[in-house]
Length: 214
Image 1: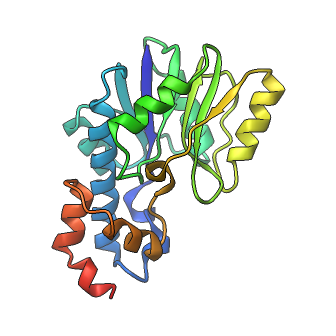
Image 2: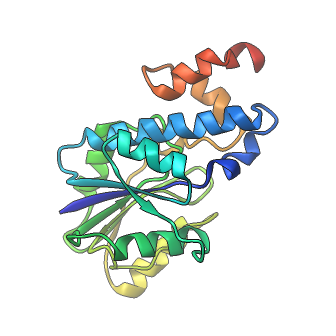
Image 3: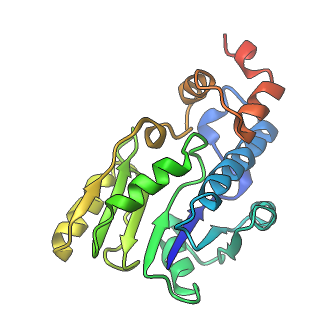
C-alpha cells in the first residue's frame, strides 16, 4: 500500500517570504491553490492508494476533504515538520508499506513526475527529489520508518546520510518540476513563465500578478 502525505502549515504562517509580492490574504489563497494542485496530482496517480494532509489549519483540512484526501490534525504539542510527519504516520490505518511525502508548494509537479519517483524507489530504501535550496522536494520511503525524517534547509544530504547509516540505498530523481517549489518572489516570476491549467495559475491570473511584477 502506498500512502501519500502532504504537510501544510497554518495559513497564517504560509509563505511569509512572499510578503514583498503578495499581501497576507493573497498568500493564504496561494497556499490553498498550490495545495489543491498537489492533491489533484497525487490523486491522479493510480499507484497511490491513499492521500492525507497533516496540518493544524481547519481551512486546509476542509480543502483536503473536498479534494478526496484524509486530513490529519496536527496537535498543538507538535514541534516542526518532522514531528508532524512522524505523528501522522503513527495514526495511519492500515499501515502503509510505502510512504510518499510531498510538500504543498509544488504546483507544477505532474503524475508522471510522481510515478518516476516511485519507480526509482528501491525494494527497501529511499527515493528523493532534491529542491533548489538543498532540501527534499519529495521523499519516498519503503517501509515508512526505514530512516527518520530530517526535513529542513539543506537537509537532502542529511537524508542521504541517514540512508547510509541504515544501510539502505537512496535513489535520486532530479527534474525541473520538483525543483520549482514556490518560496520567493523570484519563484513566482519563474512560475509565471510556465503557464498551465492549474488552480495556482488561475489565481495568479486573477490577481494580475504578471503585470504587478514587471
